[in-house]
Every structure is written in C-alpha cells, then in structure tokens.
Image (cartoon, rainbow over all chains, first blue to last red; front, side):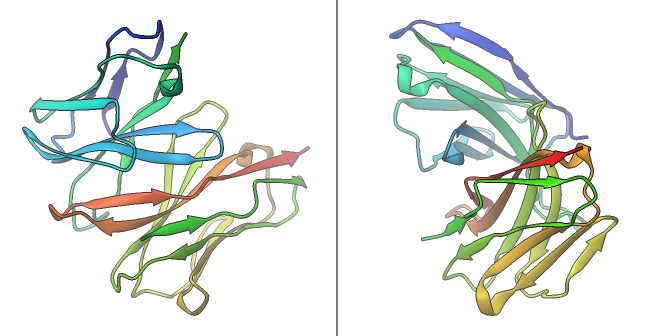
Length: 115
Length: 117
C-alpha cells in the first residue's frame, strides 16, 4: 500500500471557523490531489499539486485553498467552513512509473462535519 | 468535457451469482485511461485496474474481469461467483491530461454492490 496518511481522520467544527486538513506521503510522489466525496456525486477534484509550490484548481475549488511547501505534505484549508463543506475528503498521490503509469493511490480519508 | 456514467446506483445479488457493473464514458481525447476503484464499507479507496485507451483486450484477474469496448465507450466490470467480501461501492474513472501534464480523474457516481449471503 502507498504510504499516505491524512490528519485528522475525523473533525467536527463550526460554521465560519478555518480548518486545515493534512495529507502526508512517504512515497516521494510528484503529484498530489484533494478530492471530496459526497452522496450522488462520486469523487470530485478540489485542487491538485504538480510539484512543490505548484498547485492548480479542480472542479470544486471555491472556498478551498491548498499549499505544498515540501514534497511529502499537501495541505487543504477551508478558510471559513460552511455546512456545504461537510464531506469526506480524500488525498491521492501519483507518479509516472513504467508499471502503473500515473495511477492515483488514495489516503484513508478525513470525515469533516461543519455544524 | 469528460464524463463518466454509472447508471446502476445499487445492485444486490445472491452470493455466487455473477454480476456486471456498467461504466459508460465520454471524452474527446484519443489517449486516455480508464480505472475501477473499490470502496469497501471501511471507507478506503482501493485501486483495481487501469486500462489504456489503445488496449481493448479484455482483462481477467481471478474472479474479476473487465470488458473495454471503444465502439460503445464502455468499460464494464464483471465479478464471477460473487462473495460477501465483494460488497462495496465501485467507482469507474476516466483520466484526462491537465495543462501541466499530469493526469486528472473524472469519477462516476459509483455503484453500491451488496452480496446477499
């Protein structure tokens, strides 16, 4: 299994508060991704990183920001959490390899509840 | 724009029956990859298969098999002799290349498969 951890695994917060989720990898993979999973929507890409300090928006980026100051860590910040951001958040990593191409491997997820 | 449709929201079958999960995709790219992921009740996402758009050969891995048909833009997944451990949500996904050269994924909404003992 790819070495990916997410912290916290569960969080309850109040509307209007800032929240930061952390994704940490030990695989030295170049690419990292944040998704959210909601019923009826599958997984949707929030932001991704194609290198240290290099990030770009996904399809549902409003209300989220990210940072990647080193290869192993990719942070997702909700500047001012809203109830619509209640979701399960997954981090994924990938690297272009001869055997598996850029297959994305996922972390265990973070369950966030915004009250 | 890329799109993945998994029309079957939920499927229930009795153990040992065969079951096929459908996946239909839309893309204008000539080179792309298709994926299946499994999400068991414990919640993690498990990679099952990655298939190149130029490789239409069917693939078999134990009780799992995949049928890729470019003519119908489908990438269906069959489980033979289903077992209770196959109960999970299964996601089909389609890759496309970002402006920065890496692959991004578009996921279907998933099919919840329940195997009844």
